[in-house]
Length: 110
Image 1 (cartoon, rainbow, N blue to C red):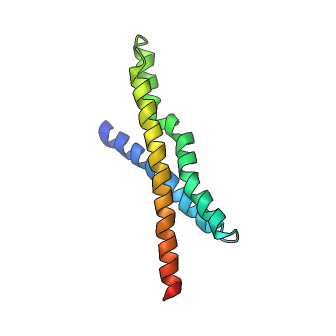
Image 2: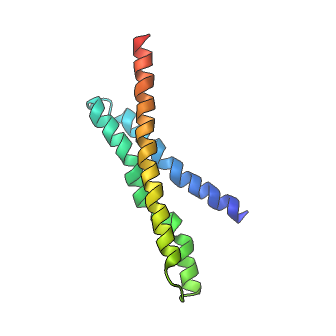
């Protein structure tokens, strides 16, 4: 049950910033499209970079509190994974904006 809870937490941390970016895009409807698309593509990576350590490093902090004699390799690996997930968030944010652009062009061309 703990594994399912941790996977749901990880999924939520990865999905929430993307949804927030899409909502920002629609909220900035009065701004020029390139500003709205750029802000909405960058926001998921920034939100994940802010929220990620809170949830993803909690297990490492608990383990170091129990057994302080660690070499720090787990923290270094978690940091590398965290930076990779931030890059993935940035990539997925750009892809989401490209999909929204393609849908808008398809709707207005018909």
